[in-house]
Amino acid sequence: MEKEKPVGVFDSGIGGLTVVKRIASVLPNESIVYFGDTARVPYGSKSNETVIEYSIQNAKLLLKKNVKAIVVACNTASSVAIPVLRDMFSVPVIGMIEPGSKMALRATRNGHVGIIGTRATVSNRAYSREIHQHNKDIKVIEQACPLFVPLAEEGWHESDAAALIAKAYLSPLREEHIDTLVLGCTHYPLLANVIQRTIGEEVLLIDSGIAAAEIVREELDRIGLMSNSNAMGRMDFYVSDIPSTFAKVAALFLEREIKQVTKVDLDYLQSLHG
Ligand code: DGL
Image 1 (cartoon, rainbow, N blue to C red):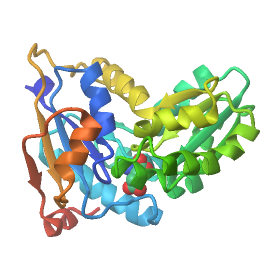
Image 2 (cartoon, helix red, strand yellow):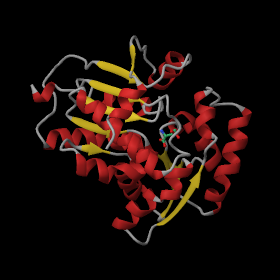
Image 3 (cartoon, rainbow, N blue to C red):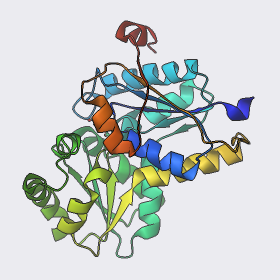
Image 4 (tube, helix red, strand yellow):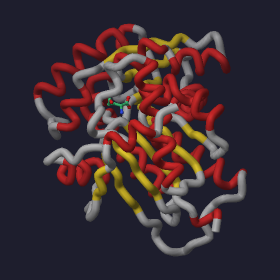
């Protein structure tokens, strides 16, 4: 049955599990197949060509698992690969940039919006371009925060180091008097507390994963492919390498036990090129 096919989600690694968590809470009956490209992470410091090529391979892998839609949980991949994937594949392809931007546009009152993400996401200016397509008058200030990813993966959410680094990254945004800040990277929701304290309680944080989960629901509804099942959806996990800390970090991201993770052979993945 078409409707009972899983939703495919991919990310450069395990960070996309923050998005899986959001989808599972909005759509608990949908099954999810997750692919984390743990052998080739990070994407945030790679060229657009490489990220596009990897994204095509990841999408093809998910389609081989019979998915009915593809969610690009990685903001970096979303910032460059969405048009290519939409051209190549007939299933709906949902990225992080459009949903996060839409939510920010709805939320801002003073028209000053901050975006934080990887170096690649920020240098692609994907959020600025998307926001300006809808409203040219919004002032968008983008800031790369590359050290947030390792801090989140180390579980150093509440450390003094996190507070110091957040202060250094977020001070320029404070000076611009933003009232809305988009967490434009899979890992940043894990640092939401320190980010909120640093930027100020009056600034609204936008979790692109929450925004995207809502769009997945709307899209499945629109194409008539929402699951009819009353049971909790299955979750199947695939990775291109199994780091020793995978189970621990994944449990932290998902706040749930992960029983089985299957390794995908890298040569096979690379054979699925564009
Ligand atoms: N998943 C990436 C993102 O959301 C962060 C990690 C990486 O650089 O690959 O942009």
